[in-house]
Each structure stands twice: as C-alpha cells, then as structure tokens.
Image (cartoon, rainbow, N blue to C red):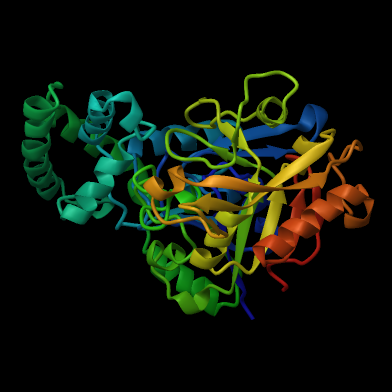
Length: 439
C-alpha cells in the first residue's frame, strides 16, 4: 500500500530539509514541491572525496538527483528564467531534469515587475521595519495570485491572452512603481517577448500534476512532499509580519499540489539541534555570533550558517522547545529529524529554551505574532555538553551519553519522537530510529 510523507521545516527555515528529502527519495517514486519560490535554497552533498558533488537547488525538487519523477505544484510561484538556469546547471552536471520534471499549469508566474516592486518596497521601509525579503519578487507574485490578476503557466499557451493580461497587470504595477515608490516603470513589450520566448522551453514539462500524483498513488507508489522555508515563516502561523508569503505548514502539501489530505500519511519535521533565523523579526533564544569562543560564534562558524540563496549570515541561538511546540501543533508532526548535532560538539554546557516570561507569567508555547514574541524573555534549562565528536555517527548507541540525553530531553519537551538524527551532510551520515515510509 502506498505511503506518502511530508517534509517540513519546523523553525525559521534552513533546517537541512534538502539532504533529508534526498535521503528519503530512495523510497519514493515521486517528489513534489508544493509552495514558495526560488527564495528557498536546498543544498545536497552526494559522494565522498573526488566523487563528492554539491548541488544547490531553489525550485527543482531535491529528489531530482535520485532519478525519480519530480513535480512543481500549483502552490509554487515560478520564475521561468531562474528555473531554466537551474535546469541547465543540473544537466551540465550530468543530472537529467527535463524528462523527469512536471510543472503545474496553475503555477503563478514571477515577472520583472514583481522583482521591481519587492526591491523598491524594501528600500523604502526604514531599517527597523524591513522584512529581510530576498528581493526575488515572491511576495508581489503571491499578492497578484490572491488579487486574481496573476498570469499563470497555462496563460503561456495563449500568447494573445497573455499579452492582454500582462498589459492590465503592468498598468497597475507601473503606477505603483512610479507614483508611489519612485522607481522606474517596467517595459511591458520586453517582458512579453522574453517570457513567451522562454515559455517554449518549459511547455513540454507542463503537466496536470494533480492527476499525475493520483495516478502514482493509485499504482501503489510512494510520494514525498517537500516543503520550503520553515513553519514559523508561514504567512498565517509565523511571526507575522516577519514571514514569507506562502503557507509553509504540512497542510499546504494538499492544497499546493492538488491532492486530498487523506493522501498525507506521515509528517516529518526537520529541526536543527539549535536555532537559526535569517532576516528581521524576533528571536527569543538568540545569541551573539561575532565574539570568538562563545556558543553563538561556534554555531555560526562551525555550522556554516550562511543563506544558500542570499549568502547572508544567519542569526543563531539555543534550541527553542516552546517554538517547536507551536510547530508540532500547526503541522501535526508524526516525527522529528534533528540536524547539525555535531555543531554542538565540544561545548561544556547547553541551554534549551523551555518557555518564556511574558507580562509577569510563564508560558510554554510561542505566542502568535511578532509583537508578542518580541516581548518574550526566554526561560532556559541547562544540560551538560559533550567533548566527543558526533560527526558522521550512524548508530544511536554510538552517540556520546550526553548527546543522547540531550536528544531525549528535546523529544520529551516537544512531545514528538525523534525518528532521525543527521550527523553530517552526506546521505550515509544519518541515524535512523524509525523510517517515515515504514512507520
């Protein structure tokens, strides 16, 4: 009987989902990306020594390097130029993409006007109000989707209709760009010609993703649904307004790919052994990362905490169990995968945020909205560290006793079993306690 797994980030993104999706793909016949855009970045490390290859993906699902069928669902906003560049880079490296990638005709398109709006708005905000957007046009593209003026992939098959819709959209966006934001207008004729020319390359990949997924499921084939960003960046459930523009939680796997919730059997939450965040917004357990010899500096440097897409330094802090409890609820997590445990090797003591002081009381669940979270004072529990290396360990019993105790405590605090521990970037550097496709 087919079994389908959803993989989501449980913090503020960058939890290491790409490696885990790649690792799990060995048990799947199809991998689906169901939300976000090319503002998300997944890094895969395959092989060792001279055979080692590093793949950096933004839109193409991480399962592509495993040779299975991959899909971009209707919940994704699509920059055609970026997608083609990513496909070309993968195929230049020996990975066949075009024959194995299906793109939903319902994907909204990211156009140059969306990028221009994104950049102009962020520039106009004063420093304290900046969201930390990647400037890729993601937010404005989702706005057009909700406002029902988006151009979607299926419009590319009708050049006349595409030109009419584009003219209407640019009439609105150029007014905002020039009159409100003081930016340059976008040339509609250039956008029309470039977009339709690029469309010829993606047309053969456009498929009814919903129908394809149902066919695979009916044929008793396993499916893997790959989320982008993290749950606390979710537009509804994250630290609003310091969030992304899509739903990052597990339930979006259904809406963003065109299948029913009954087809989602197991939800795996990817969780760093500490916590990071890129861009603006509150971060209760945050540490100083620039002072050498401090835990925050070790997390930043040893963890190589730099954005795959933006190259920005990630903010770092202690593991936040109150935050994870919120993610457990909004995703309906079945199990956890802890990543980057080795980054904590060598620390004398570890702290875990178990709750917050807010308005004179102790709470054990992350509040809703950035304003309340910003007023939270973390309550920490101290646990002993370990001196031994955990890097590359593949058996639970071989972990240092204090590392096992640390993970056991996280499991208890979050109320969800830790089924996987990632001890390095390569596929084999993984401890499996319970397999998501067999649980």
